[in-house]
Amino acid sequence: MQLRYQIGSDSRTVTLEREGNQYRVVVDGRHYTVTIQDTSEGEITFVVDGNLRQAYIAAQGEQRYVAFDATVHSFSKSDSNKPRRSGTGGENSLTAAMPGQVVNVLVKEGDEVKRGQTLVILEAMKMEIRVTAPADGRIAKALVSSGQIVERGQRLIDLISS
Image (cartoon, rainbow, N blue to C red; front, side, top):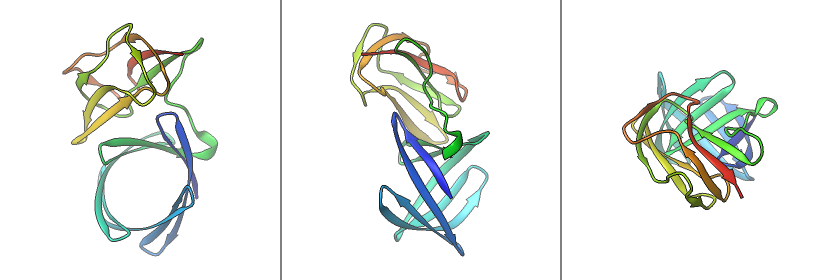
């Protein structure tokens, strides 16, 4: 099975092959062996090449969100990939990948930002999630504040790309 893997504005194809209780995963030509140890609603414990790991999982339609190593990864089938940004005329709306609480808003309207710069820090499913700028640009509007509870898909920041 092939999935489209997206983090920020970068997108990759991930190939998964099941072999009993193990999966062979190929990302950018790198091969991984993954063994599922335990699953419960919204959580999975697994071993990757001998290292025990834990991830939190949420779904919305064809999209799958995996919080792992303090980053939320968005997965979707390659034929139904939907970008997390929208807008016209160079304006992008960055949205929450899953429900959570805003820990910190690091920018304000008018700030110039660089691609990859952290704009907002969210806490969701016991994970700290950094929402980063997908491109260089300027903050058109910060739509959330520290302490606010947000829903999946809620707009956080409007960014005008350079």
